[in-house]
Length: 184
Image 1 (cartoon, helix red, strand yellow):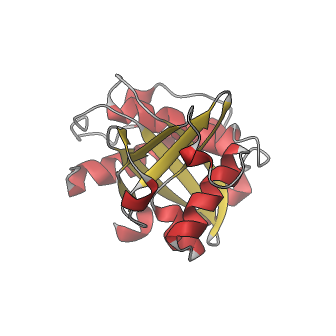
Image 2 (spheres, one colour; image 1 turned 120 degrees about the vertical axis):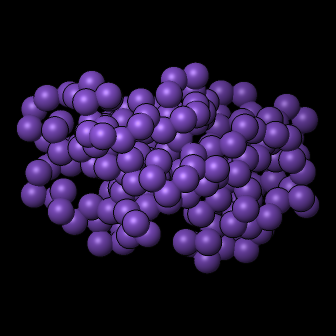
């Protein structure tokens, strides 16, 4: 569990990474931590989501990492702002309209479709070279039922609905600790 101070530090580091990068420099992750703060403890996967006026503007993550969580968050903030292939790179005029959300991931574990809890479990599905991942907050934001969530995961992976039952499917769940700037 990330304490409130670490949450603030990680969110500030994500914003500072983007801010400095908009000025043409890619900052070293330790340089974006607010002065006088401790480096947040822990490692693991994380996603950084950018929203502009409530709409998705970028979201990139790393499923697992052995790097310090602050480094992972800084790198994913940069990637969400400038490397998400679904969106053009962020420009400086947008920064004030951007809300940053961080999702710290748990480890992954096998799950059956009937065990999935909407809003609790994030899901990853892989069959062959096709794969998709949805964070646990996605079905809540979309107003999806469990069956819509599972169907959405298959669509994201480019697979037919029901592919979680495919004999070669890797169907995994995870939980995420989600926090954003509007909560701080």
